[in-house]
Length: 68
Image 1 (cartoon, rainbow, N blue to C red):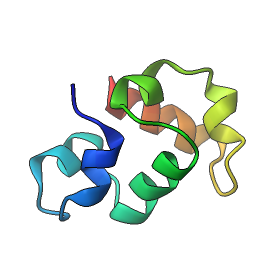
Image 2 (tube, one colour; image 1 turned 45 degrees about the vertical axis):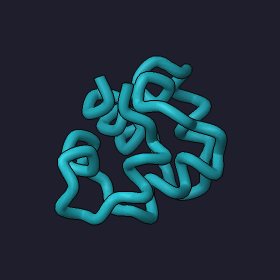
Image 3 (cartoon, helix red, strand yellow; image 1 turned 90 degrees about the vertical axis):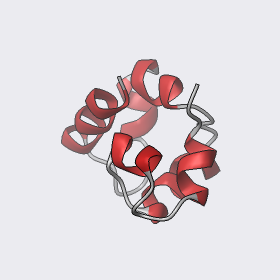
């Protein structure tokens, strides 16, 4: 299992970062909001992600698709 925490700790050239294809700031924001795995990002209710400041429905949908 690849964790979001691992993603946020990796450099942008990391394979894990490329899997979700987000910059470190986005990964750290997800971690600070309580997401600890890519599976959580993929399968949580979309409203939980879209309620994060700066994340709209389109961004949420894209993150969830990338995390699957």
